[in-house]
Image: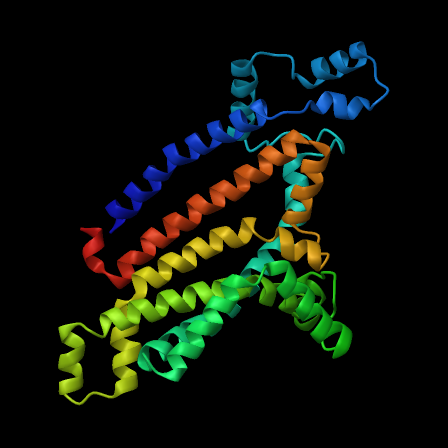
Length: 313
């Protein structure tokens, strides 16, 4: 078991190194000059050159990359060109709302999607199955910003049940924190509910065709026990895989929900940094998003052992 975990952890190191090289190269080659943006439209060429020299942007690629890599290994993501604050400090200030939104979205999606998928598999080829799969198609088809505006209009502007915008931290109370996350989480979750429900249905339907399920039925075991204790557990690997992919995508995919509901998270920080061409912040955010994918994939791989002990061999 521990050998398997150590191998999987070590396997993530070259992936993270490749991600770091890719992120730096991509932004180095991207069009646009941050020195010109900082200097403004009326700046003289010598002013832009002086800013580039002060920022170290006039140095060769390898020198800049070596310097950047050294700072990354020491946990230093650089300093914002515009605010002058450390990138780690800016990310730390914004990561709370994003993680809160991702957590509430994931919990809502799992609580809704997995039972729906199991129900559709239990009632396969009936109106229940067709209704659930129809809702799943609807979840994929409607753009997120449309879902967000509809939810805000109905539940905030018309019914006045939930706040329409903003964010408060958990230390100000569970309901104030949760009430501001329900609508953006439902917006983001519409896609993940559809995705997880479809995968759950397919996996459970396939498992129900196995011989041991037929044997359990022949022995007269309770249908719900067969479905939830045997079929769902053995269909766990594809379900956990799609949930893991959803977690990684949630952390980097909150831009639309944060924009619609005015949540001061990493998505808003990303948009502001791109508009200003604040390269250190963009690099730091892309690294955080990429590494979150790597960490989540690692956790998903380790979770496989729970569902199929043969994987550790």
